[in-house]
Image (cartoon, rainbow, N blue to C red; front, side, top):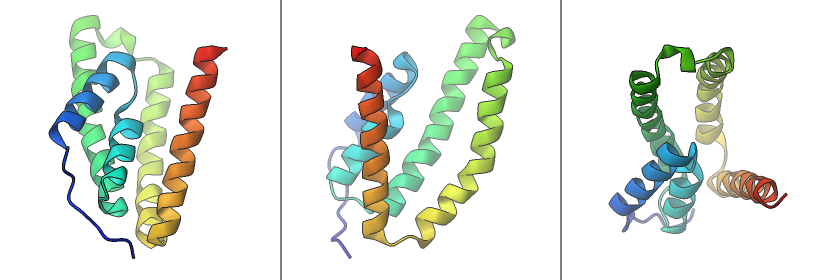
Length: 125
């Protein structure tokens, strides 16, 4: 088992991740999760905590969005994403609980790298 450490830079990281998520429509998960893992935090605790915090962050951003633009901004696609996320979340928690720590770190690294490469490809294409 890898040695687990406490995060040294959490508040500025949360502020930056929240700003990127609110202003650009994404960034909380990749920015915060990867940085906390690099700092040596427990992967299970990190993934669970980041996802829980992301729920509240997204809720606050969505409420602000609805208050300023109105309910018509929410479409069928948004509803589908919400329902899909609610269905998928328990499975993610079960996987994170049962998978070995090293395997979980590898899986998180692969997903973060793949999504970052895809975003980079879209930005450059």
